[in-house]
Image 1 (tube, one colour):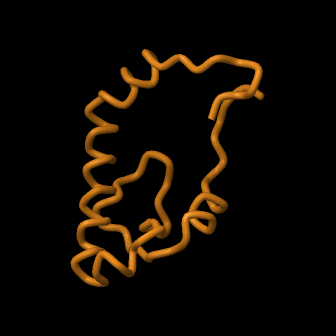
Image 2 (cartoon, rainbow, N blue to C red):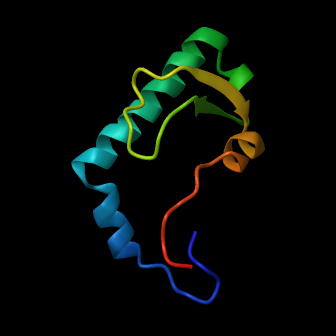
Length: 85
């Protein structure tokens, strides 16, 4: 999320999301969610997220263990992002 005093560059975000690497990661996240829905049912995942255990910022998500957690729990354990602060 951009700092409150800076405007977001939506064009830059769209270019980043369209890169082949990000498309593969998004597809892996979607596949993991579909697998969790198949295993636990759609009602069990309502308001929840699929957490990829042990994944790095740029690593492959397809062969990672997953678990179903609340949105708050998943977002609170996000890895540090490198950047100028």
